[in-house]
Length: 426
Image 1 (cartoon, rainbow, N blue to C red):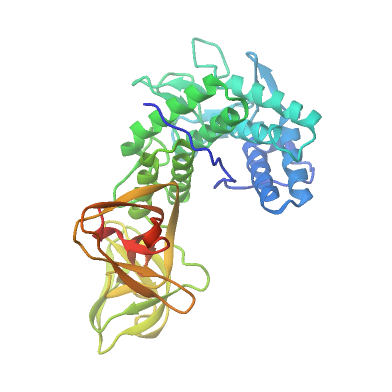
Image 2 (image 1 turned 60 degrees about the vertical axis):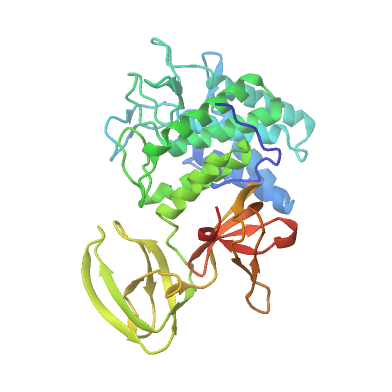
């Protein structure tokens, strides 16, 4: 399957960040991905702010990783300097030094971005280009025979994988999704720098693998799996999967990854509403309030009857296992209880779970069907009705949950900036 590549590139990512730019006694024991993630985040911050200390930090991380490299099999590998045994995923035991495809791909990202960055002096850009070439060479080395190290392999379906946790025996690696996707971003960055045809082919092959394995990654109506081998749902990485798939949709120009990111968002939306929470309205009538155990079992319930609409503060909007989306109420007669989100009877005001599309996507207004569109100017929400005499394709560049209803922001000239509910479109 061939993917077309977006021209807008990436402006930072969802990488989890750890590390520091201050040398210390514990530096040598850090996993390289901490420094690489920190470097990438600082480079993205320099793009936004032009503040020199961010670029200094990014280069400091890159330079340390380069200094500690291992030259093996004609490539640069970046060692994990400690023994490791995964406490949850069986079979993942390593003796130092060992090497991870996630770190190799993130190194490729950082070196490639620095090598093409105008804020870096030309002589130093050449050094980072050499480092990018060395890192990319590691992603061309498969697990063939007894030759080690390696981080790239084909699975039993002949699909390409970059392994965060490579294991020598074929088919026994963890097949970790997020580590693979982070490494794929490195392939994109190197291709953007070099226009290397092998990087293009690997990027395309990796996307083909991710698309093929999405049904195994996803648990409909619940958290996605951390890896293919153990199929353990994880709240820690679910939002990371959402963000990474969104970035891959931007880079590849493929709607498939945008759709997959949206599916994971609907399966288990990010549960936090921030410190201030969100304003919710419960319409008049009877509502059932619940308390749940961690596994979704009901531990208590009661009825709340309202004679008029009631506004309250919700501190959490989350999927309950085996159930729908529930709001945790913080004040009034429902304080400490959860109520099922039901548009329009129970709704959370504002815009939540937003996702941007690059390029814009398309939906259709059915012929003669009136669609109520909304806009949110400073003075308050206004509505208008959109009707076309024949089926009409319109584009949209953002999707979000607005007042507990999934909506898209339209970009077609006559409706640009207006939001339309997805359940009224095709």
